[in-house]
Image (tube, rainbow, N blue to C red):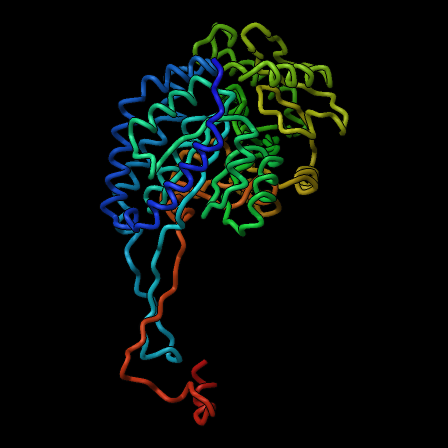
Length: 460
């Protein structure tokens, strides 16, 4: 299935149409925002099955995994926004210092305006539609751009959006990097981009001429540390699950393993055992194991397997783009497995004897999107205090994304800005300070020639 690029003239038309609509002020009332969110919820329910069918077609993603990692998360964000948007959007009275009296101080949250949301292929429903919840809750318009690498999903999303929203509020365009380049050349009030750090830099460069605010959700190499006192059975199960989810094609997947030398062999055996529990009949023909998205990605992952010693897994099938969960040891420091974000079910394995080796290694590389530690809680907090990452889990993987009450986002090379729940609303909003002064009461102390300066100095 091949998607056609949306014509350039059509993209320009939608961009102008949304700018004109936003300028009318129609998106600002909370009633409009709630109406759009209710339409969103109804449209997603109507298109839930076609979207899940498309996820199976493009990625071999089961209904259960599709619902848990894509559809269900969007339902939760819509529900949360509908419940709280009136509170999030209301004007707030703020304290006023003596030097500003008798004025009153306020904070208003206003929509940024016309926005662009660009999503990747790995979670093509969640990563396109979750930001849209924030855009609509904040009172913005949005043009959506999904990935061409999942054509069935992107085509279904296009039909859903056209069926659910007026195009002056929300529209979807299709295409390759040429379309991306055209979109990034237009002026937006916010660009929300999820993808690789390399493409994130391209977005920043293109929008720099407009000084456009950006939310960049990128990726990187997220470490997973297993210390000598970790519960190996639990650690192996949660790490295997986190790596097998979407076949490792997850921006917050544990990317490489750092095993304490004392438990290295025991963990590898526990990992093999937990894979047998997760997939009693193996992963190759399991309906709960995602396949690699396209041939080029499969070939890239296959190339990694020759860089070291395979101690678990290693089998694959190019016809179905299936790659078995694999552990690789004996790597040279310059191996691609240790330099490139893997985005697949392959685990390079490193060892350590002192946690300082781990912190030195992590801190000598780009800041990761996620950080995972298995061992004593106190040691986990200690190592977190000596490193940085977008998010983290102690004795778990992935689960920090499941709680919308905490922010999700990167830092440095792994991204900027965060979202989920109220933070999604704030990502698409501008917090505007307002001072309201009485017209008749006009105290003289602030005016030249500053006769009351000694008093002013005490007040400031």
